[in-house]
Image 1 (cartoon, rainbow, N blue to C red):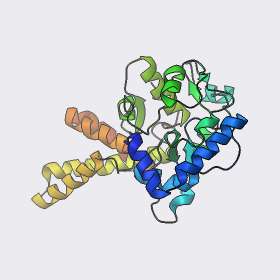
Image 2 (image 1 turned 90 degrees about the vertical axis):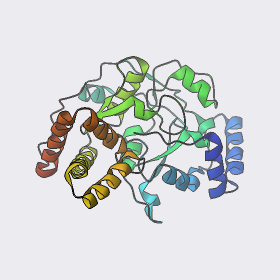
Image 3 (image 1 turned 180 degrees about the vertical axis):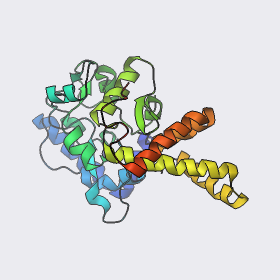
Amino acid sequence: MIRIPVTPQELVRLIDQEVPDWRERAAKQTQQVRKQKRFSGEGLWSEVKGVYMALQHHKCAYCERPMAESPYANIEYDVEHFRPKSRVIPWPDAKTAKELRIRYKVRSGNPKGYPLLAHEPHNYVVTCKVCNSPLKADHFPIDGELSAEGSDIAKLNAEEKPLLIVPLGMADPSPDELITFEGVLPVPAKRGGYDRKRAQVTIDFFRLHLRTDLRDGRAHLLVMLWEKLERAKNGTPEQRRLAEQVLAAARGNRFPHSRCARAFLDLYERDPAKAKDYYLAAHELVVRKEPGLYGRGASRS
Ligand SMILES: [Zn+2]
């Protein structure tokens, strides 16, 4: 997961540019919610999906999976409400807790949801169907207390202490500083406290360490990057130039699984022998594809 760096002013500007009367109609919907004290009526969020697709470089906000960019790509993306609009279902259930070997305590956000945030642009990201439907669903795990606040996100965050990391915006610390990678495996970057817990919950919640498509995508990436790192060191001048271009791109935000790429490139500079171990493990995944490096549920910190 990486930060989607956008200021509140810029987000509003992009939305106005995409659908000039969206905010006005959204405000009316929110007024309706205030009167009725629950979400009802029309959902307008799909109209601004394109804003988030572009901001997120056509990747899922949570798993960094690449998604299509063509005019027909809309179908692939869901607009996800970070805080669910009409109800919150506790997470994890007993089966999930057992399966993921969860030992930490989790509270749950407002059971009635956050209807005043149904049309709040800062409560949206776009995600893949897997992250949104079976996984995120109507869950909203928190570490703090239930809040009486209805619409002030900063206040809600301070009181509730969400346990999922929200990638949109400029809040500190950035998601990049909370989750890092050991090879293809996502791990919390901090040693302890709330920041470590929410990284672990986010990894568990979205099963970022278990989904084979994500793992394999990262493995292909690491194999490719290793080849480029070697080329950049030993290639002809032309090969070096081309390899450096790819490595520079991999450090940017556009690459699929770019957090994983950056962690690997940083490690290569710090500890090339360890990077080679991860490369060889990724190579095994790419050429053998089974039984899976982490497929037996091992290696969780
Ligand atoms: Zn996803």
